[in-house]
Image (cartoon, rainbow, N blue to C red):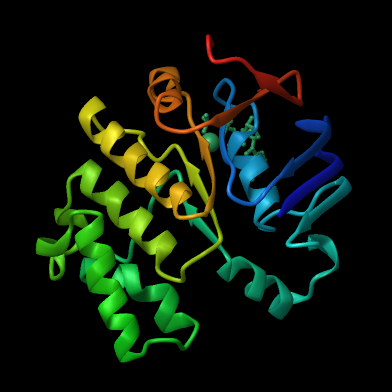
Length: 225
Ligand SMILES: Nc1ncnc2c1ncn2[C@@H]1O[C@H](COP(=O)(O)OP(=O)(O)OP(=O)(O)O)[C@@H](O)[C@H]1O
Ligand SMILES: [Mg+2]
């Protein structure tokens, strides 16, 4: 689904990531961990084609990401839901419209999709926040709205970048349960996080693989991090 073949990346000068080879099989659940600044967000950006590898090859759904034109990349990206680390919204639009934005932008805003939107908002526990504006949401509500927006196009892969940053432990577990539920529905999930307690909590819910970025490389890590 996502394949890295000897991938390297540098913003400028020294390589931030190098010799990364990896295959994310459909339906798997991965954590990505590593110190701040080690390249987790960069790695996720390589996964969904927001950045192109400086060396090696990234394949998304069996296609070389670097060889895709803009339209091809846009098509691929619809199949990958991303929860961004900073979860930004358009503050002047109600939450429901923000969540539906990927539909509107891709010209798929149909009545059935409106039903999906309401189901999705109920699923993440935001059914009473339709008309709220993003600045009126709590941190945990923002994270759940960001997750809903990442899911609105029914992606096959979900990449979540610190989805539990800035929320308390109870909310972290709630978000984790949502991501585990998505994985049980067959979606491939990758979560970048510093939160080792969250990784430990996940072990009893889902067979997760843990990847760690250290010394520019990606290593498999054990549960007892
Ligand atoms: N657009 C950019 N231009 C230049 N350097 C960048 C850019 N984006 C990130 N970097 C640098 O690359 C390194 C890795 O950044 P990245 O955001 O991938 O780390 P991270 O592991 O996600 O960190 P965190 O845990 O703090 O989110 C950092 O040193 C960062 O300063
Ligand atoms: Mg990051």
